[in-house]
Length: 132
Figure 1 (tube, helix red, strand yellow):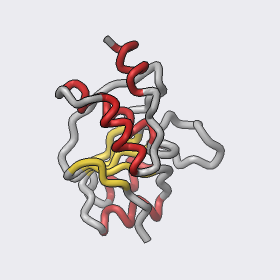
Figure 2 (cartoon, rainbow, N blue to C red):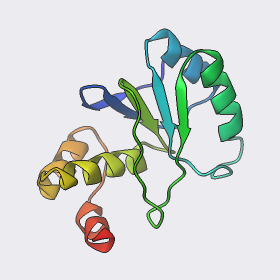
Figure 3 (cartoon, rainbow, N blue to C red):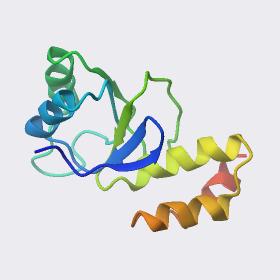
Figure 4 (cartoon, rainbow, N blue to C red):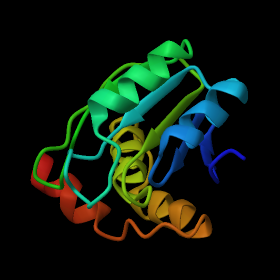
C-alpha cells in the first residue's frame, strides 16, 4: 500500500515519513523522484537517508536528500513526478509555497491551499520575509 500523498501541483506531491515499503510502493506507482527534506536522526527509528537512497535507486528512482529546518531552506531541481517528504509534509509544503511565491503567488492563498489539504504553513509570510 502506497503512503498517503497530497497533490500540491501537477507532478508534485508531499507525504510524511517514508519507510522501505513506502518507497517500494511509490516506485510501483510510477514515482520517479523522491526528495527527502528530513535531517537524519530527527526521530528514533527513522530510515537513514543513505539507506533510503539505496532502496530508491535500486528501484530506478532518483533520490535527493535536502535536509532542512526552518533555518536551512534550499531549492533543488528534480524530474517529475516528484514526491517531497519530511516528518509530516509541512516543511516540504513550505518549500513548495516559497517557490510559488518566487513566481508571484499570493502567500495567503498558498497558506489557504495548504490548509485545504490539512497542512499548516501559516508561518509562510514570516519565513519568506526572513529569506529576503
